Length: 252
Image (cartoon, rainbow, N blue to C red; front, side, top):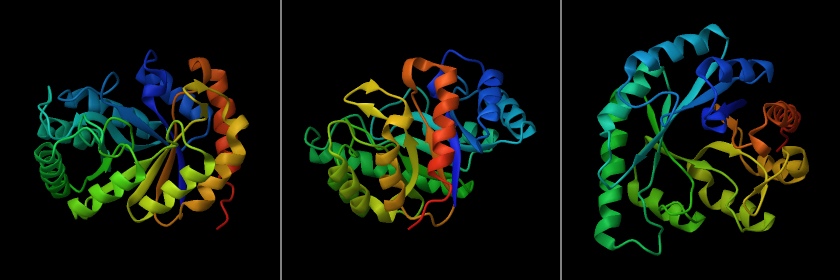
């Protein structure tokens, strides 16, 4: 079953209360709370308050959008990130698969990223929280083939993948990427860009209809709006209406 949501990083300048109000207006199911502004790692009191406010508004916490980067030293260790996600009531934590792309990383560095992800996933499993890898350039999920290879190396049942349309690929290439990582794919970040220029989701609805038809809807999956044109709340509400339309229903 698909559930709708928004990533709080879409409106970094807005308060927790303002984001909750926007998500409610858009009739979304959930919010992915980001760790850079709204729910900083280590501030478990703020995380608990945000969790309560989200619940009171009739919304779910879809995940904790952390900026923990596997395989390198972070300002906050993973245990701190995990404690924050737990206080937030998040069912999963988004982390990043290192800081280097698949063509730029040395074998020893790659193994360190893998070990770190495995350790994080095992720690999170003890708290009943999943670990999901951001699908992004400049990391080991920069291509579908690299992401698949990474997941095969990890061999950890508590690790899954996000997916988003990679910049610079055709529709056919993006659909092929979904097929490549489908066994591990969990949630999706939803936006419509041409190059790195943002456009209304309405302009990309045919592409997104194809993506959603390619992704199996088994289990709870969140389709989370991210980065709207001009950071405009009104555009966000229009994009949310399009997302609802795309997901009602998704036929396979």
